[in-house]
Length: 184
Image 1 (cartoon, rainbow, N blue to C red):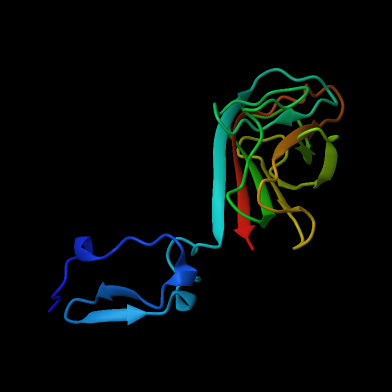
Image 2: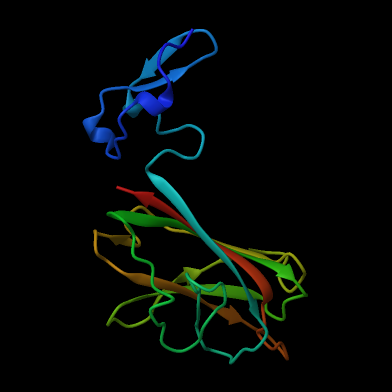
């Protein structure tokens, strides 16, 4: 039986200064090294997902629309402070996903872009798309370990451009996006 409440423990926020994590398995007090935790549950402390939703009801062919980190809507032209992400430590972007969630999109493909504060927009790559031009269209781009990395204090924005054919308008309509981040 446990003999100490969790509230009796001292809070620590840096796992490198901790020898063991403690818990209760239903009958005994248990301990486990922080290095043995990384693969379980919520993805460990080495990864994060940033996500949002938007409604892309207007489009200019060839423009990049920046994911808005704050207000959940996309923006065009130069990204402003609402569009930049400031990671809490060094890391890399592993995957970008964009999923149509409302109304049939009027595009065949998606290209993803990045921009750093004071920098130029740069093509990350063209996404792999399933269900193009249909409700539920999904665009996924997988980055290599060194494709988009940063150090602490680095800011960047991620955006998309729709790829069209024929008389398509390029509107993606309702969308949900995810950035999968791995900290190093």
